[in-house]
Amino acid sequence: MTETPLLELVDLRVRYPGRHRTVEAVRGLDLTVGREKLGIVGESGSGKSSVGRAILRLLPPTAVVTAGSMRFQGSDVLAASEAEMRSIRGRRITMVTQDPKFALNPVMSIGAQIAEAYLAHRHVSPEEARQRTLEMLQTVRFRDPERVFASYPHELSGGMGQRAMIAMMVIAGPDLLIADEPTSALDAAIQMQILAILDDLVGQRGMGLVFISHDIDLVAAFCDRIAVMYGGRIVETCAAGALHEARHPYTRGLLAAIPRLERAVEQLPVLARDESWLAP
View 1 (tube, rainbow, N blue to C red):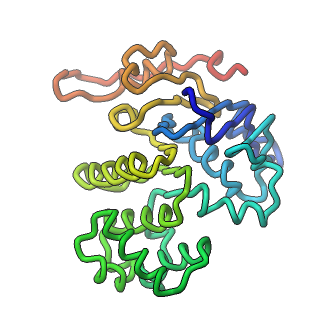
View 2: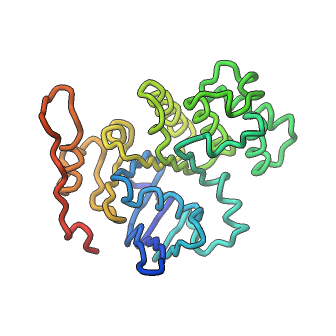
View 3: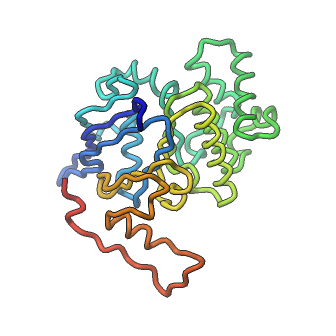
């Protein structure tokens, strides 16, 4: 990237101290994100989601987060006060999670929730917030924004709920969107709709996107760059279009384990792990 990165992480570490041992969820991670689509891939437990939540300081109090540097547009996120973080979350950095059922308030209408998010970060009238919400619902491809505005979360399908979540997260005009497994609970057709919406938003608004997923094929088709995580570390970073040229044995193992319709095999290969992959 030639432009100044939106986000710079240097030696990020996330630890969970326990009675008998300390779990190292993220170990010495270095990462830069610009106005691009960056995919972070890896198996469950590799530390992907911990990175996204550490950026927004949304990890539980038991987590110990340290970094040589954690800067967003020049601001030190790690040293920011909680009041300063409230001005960053939702306004400058936002996160879309995996399942909208657990993120949306069941007793508030969809429109009220999205408008509330806008009012929290913009000094506008309720009527202006309503109008902006309707426009945002149309942006995420709802054909009847008025009906969706008045609907409650239980009245929406999974894909509709995810689109409503995206509308809520981007209505204030953030510079960076973190999408943590936003399509894993959806069928293939709805997945493509969500990805198309994210692609349009990034292209039209010039946002940066961190797309966290375990689906390396999906990330390769959608993102500009890919960072592969294993055991809390990034073991390899490459352009999405050059994924087939990946050199690290873990990345090669992930690619080899993907079933292909055009290639019949009796048994998918099992990844042979090496202790050296965990070395700092």
